[in-house]
Image (cartoon, rainbow, N blue to C red; front, side):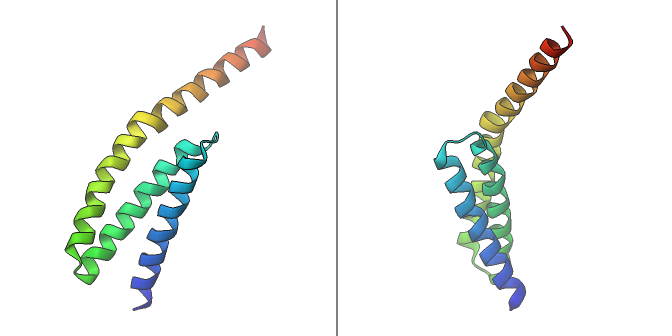
Length: 94
């Protein structure tokens, strides 16, 4: 029973942390999508193990939306940070 509790609470805490991070609209907010993804994967496994197939299906759908968020928010965020770092290092050399 302890493993199920760990899955349940880890998924819950990751979801809360991801939502808080994205809602806070700070520099690190795009990383909240990864916390959402972890939450959804963990809670999908939890739903499967306890036989709560509705919870499992819901979280599998959330996995898809989290992947969309990572693609549309996190990837551009990382590209812009990489570009800024390259611009900054180019200014230092010149």
